[in-house]
Amino acid sequence: MKEIKSSKKTSGLKKIFIKICRLLGYELIDQSTLEFPVSNKNHQNQLSIPGKRSFSLGSGETLITRKVKSLDIILKTCTSTHLVSQNKKRIFEKEKLEYTLRSIKSLCKSASELKKKFPDLLIKFLIIDIGSEEIHRNKYLSLLDGFNFELKKLDKDNLNFKPKTIDKNNSEIEKNMSTTMASIHESFIQAKNCNDLIYFVEDDYIHKSEALAEMVFAYEKFSSIFQKEIFLLSTDYPYLYKKLDNSNVLIGENYHWRTVKESLLTFLTSKELLLKYHNQLIEMAKNESNPFEKNLHSIYQKELCFSPVPSLSIHCANVNSVFGLSPNVDIKKLWNEYEI
Image (cartoon, rainbow, N blue to C red; front, side, top):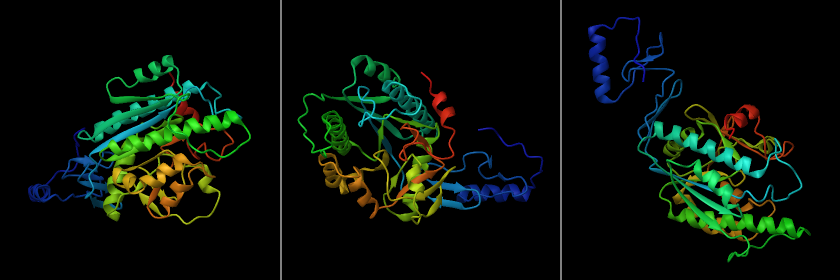
């Protein structure tokens, strides 16, 4: 952190007052310079202290009573299936491996940024792969060097788990959906071994470097305010702007967050909520509904779920999909940032 060099002279009495505030844990704001003499920071520095306090200029301080101890990132990968429906192409029209590589590269960068801000936080990756070629797995696993990670391989041709899919009069689509549901089911089973926060994510989401840190800051702040566990999304889904649902807006570390009642299957929550709703989540993976996330949406009717504004990640769906491209984000810039 760069030391502040203020042009204003500090009187002896003020220096004593600053020392007293420092001992008592209070902060002071010099409104003429937007400097914080107690912590020796300015408005451009990170003012929040992980696990202790959240601070936003203008809205003040929130004491953290819910400290995050660990984050497990459960990433579901499948480079052999481009899209479950197979009737549309993704934005930029690349092979599926390209999206998986960029997704993992973005998560690694974001995890590194998270570790800088939360040095005591334990971070682990769990990759649940179904159907990817070994050469593809080797490529994307090499990006995880330096991180604590584990690979769980599922054999899509010999699955013990047999989900019930909706009859679509298309055997290929139904088979793709069946393998996808098997991967989702396994992610919820494995999540029971996690300790604190769990981020379930698909391999077609590309994250901003600040995404994970912003999410953990928001989790600590909002769960401390409401004294309960919550759900967080990394994506600002465009389809949520198609209707006038009531939404509450909160201030996170550097982003606004709004309450939502729907999402896809990329979301962050705690082990406590996972266990509370485990049966509903497992049922969602066993029996396909329309929409698929119906059980998850019913959970959001009982629990708080927040989405970032603007988005912290982009979902690389088809350009015309209402479930894809988040508004007011430079998508091409973010895509190019993680070129392999």
